[in-house]
Image (cartoon, rainbow, N blue to C red; front, top):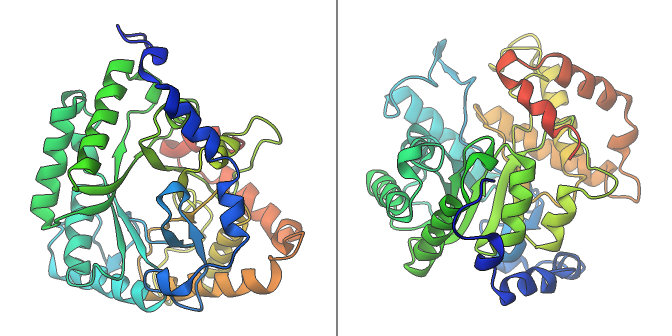
Length: 362
């Protein structure tokens, strides 16, 4: 991160670092007690729930991501089309309904079309799902939107267009590499988050990034950050020492894993129901989800589910996990299919997603 007139030491108050220290062990202490089911939003016995760091929210261990890149309706790819196309809205509404029926209680959207489509799909049912929000084209990735006022204006604009009175999580999308931001810019971002929370526009503030070193600095120095989003794939591993996940645990930060299927590089078919490879791909998705959930630092992976059948497959992954992976040594770690799956993930990464290799061991 480039130096500005203000140093990191100037910003970090004595109580800020203390808050991170006090958080040490909180996750483990709370996890030792069974959760109060009556306080879990949209609780369903078939789903697993995890505490989302210092937010205190109990979130479904598999949640709904915004990217539905491989969704086809009537044989047509609907990712790049109008957000309000009837076929797309019908699909998104069906997915949200299926998620609610399955106990999934968090959805995440970071593109303007995702936000508008999912806000429409969940309208009237916000008491069933937490909403994660990022209007990424007008946030930190864009040099024009790296001030407190500009970021707050983006939040206001997006919420107005999506007819949202409040979002549960405003998680600003940062530039990649994040270290390209000046410290002055991240100060502005933190100030915007503090203001939005204070004014009741969002309940919690967080960031998403593809840069692990930048993320570690931000978590340690900015206690306003309650949640982070970053990649965690079927091929990701935790470093034995000095891992970023140690910092996540210590600072009691919620963590949603993006790209759980490595931009779909682990699949063989086209994801459409009834395709000849559907059964194999469903198995591979379950293996990936079971593996990802072995890391207790993760609140939830957020796959971009495209069809109701894929939501059912998530519940099946939870059922398999309960049967096979809750002992001292999760069975998935010794499953020979996992090793093949991990090899396939890295071999089949598309050219535009080779950067995911940076997240293989963090």
